[in-house]
Length: 441
Image (cartoon, rainbow, N blue to C red; front, side, top):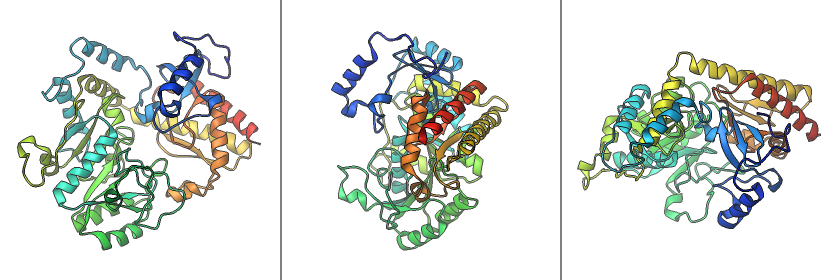
């Protein structure tokens, strides 16, 4: 299994040529891609399969994968435990609706066991749904409309999340930038924005809007930015003081920073938390976890009552995603799993920083635990504005150089180490970075 640059003439492994698939994409998909990401035409590839830490394109080339399903594939692609669980369950029914199923119940039991804030949970289909529903529950519970989020934070694609996702400059806090057309004017005024790791600005905004604020939503780790000591605890204290619901967006950090996610890692318990990705083993499943008094507002027996929060979805509690999630969490529960994962990540970061330093490239391999990203900044960023101050053009050129050399990443975004990554992966990644640095000039 050799990576793309070593075997550029690999034999195709799909029924059609890669060019045929590109033609289909151009005809049927806006921009010829999936969602909000697009690679340059000369670097695009079509994935045929994933195995362990690598993905294979339809033209036969292998790439070392650090996209990892946007963080969902913490145990790699096609892990035997997950494949076995899904295969067995497939013969027993792919999907039900509304009626309880055993797999979803067993997963709910496991989630409540591990998530510190989880007295109860409600299932969702995606992480975007999970943040959207968490905000709805907070509004229903408080009778207030506004939510405070942090500049550059990604909470999904719904209207309440699509504000200050991709800022070009510091906001006029608490007014954020709107990142999509089609957003009602009424929505824009309900989302306030503050810089991450800045409690003073949060205090100022809350002092002015406390009677209107339903929730503060925060990622325990925002993109590649880790919280400064006291930041999350400070948010907890502010919310307690003003009767505001504290929401952790753990769609990425949940089960990746440990079985207790960001809550366990940093010792701060929110009122509600949103999950996705790992909880469904990469399948279509997420959840909102939290205090029973908040989650009970979703009880269908309360329909018609003031403060009832309606939550429903066709795929909520899907049995295939549930058994995939159970199998994945079972692997994560093995002794030393996260310690080994974090050690691997540090090994990779060390190798990559050595390459950058040797080549005289003024960049850092940022991140901790199983997150990494190469930034053209002098130090680890404390907020989104620090990242914006870096050399984004050179960062993109370097990222594209890595893709050209067989490393599967998305330019300008964080990357994920999986438990199945090997020393060979890391050596080849360092080799690819060396070539990309040389080409950078």
